[in-house]
Image (cartoon, rainbow, N blue to C red):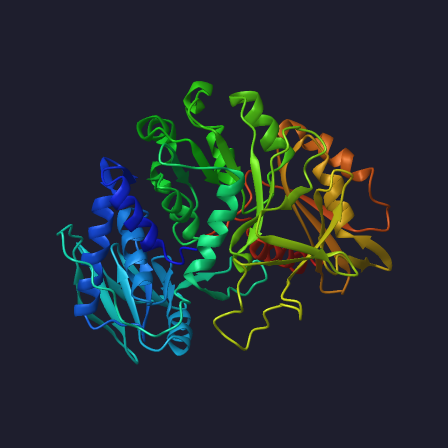
Length: 497
């Protein structure tokens, strides 16, 4: 088993030296060039005094530098995490306590805040490097991407291989840092490639933000000798142009990104080179699947997974468009699934994590090595797992038992609803109220939706329906459930009802 991505790059450099590894705007970087870019970057990092006892936060655009710097650091056994360019000082301090000396490598404007106050700002023409000291951010140098054909001299380091650091999306209100060995992200990529093959003729485009599961951007194509097509969010409206330009064959994105496609100038013919469209990160709704099929005659392969399981873990490639909304599918090769006594989904596999970087945070791994997801599922007649809901979803509203899972299932069947979110809040009189946030397919259908919801609830259940043009999103492009919960609290506390 190849444990390191650099071994794959070396292999493709020897077998297909001029084959394109990375495509970004008008740049085409071959596997031979990528190999030497990594070597030169390692030499510069070494000269700046950064070694395996340190850690790095990378902040930059979604371009070739993002991949080259990460792979160079992996190869030097230096842990690296990709982050957004606006960071809270408290997060940096927490990271520094966990990881010895911490450096920031950046190629765009970096802003560090203390609460709402900007306390540091820096920009580098190339890749700037900062050392985080006690109370200062020391600028120590720059990295210049070079392709000089130097001999590769492996670093003699004895540290462990936990070089891939990633943050959870924070849906539990706590964003945790996951630490993984490099071979785990390779195992995850191999699992997906076994079902959805890729080779040197393919070009893979991942639409995820650079700080959200960054290995999903490059790992699958690199182990297959395929091309990586990089597209920044600001260029998303030109995606049809880049699909043609790069001859893209596989795309992976988030449902909210694919919803945006419906408003872009994209024709059915623009997808003619696409073999697979993968959707993950959030539920791919019936509305999106129907709309995508009606406009482009393309279906989605949906992925379910988490940072803790190495990313995409469960897949569903069923082509039918109805009665599908809650199906998450079956496990990818290399993963095992079991259900607990209360039908909680538990996952085990080579790509699953061993724990969080902060050892004080419970990993939810049981004695058999299964990660307990807190998701409740059921198995249908086809052997596919269906999402039922989260643990502790049955609550009392004014003495009446209510199942949030059942409410969500009911709402998901309404053809007039594009997206929705439900939450419970309590007013100043300690009366619980159910809030239902809805993005309708159109404003004209709001009355149909109200009538549909009224059929479900008894008069004893207090609830409110709030229509939104669009659901608020987190940095990870997931529904910002914390903001919606806060909005619900503010509304009931302001009117006292």
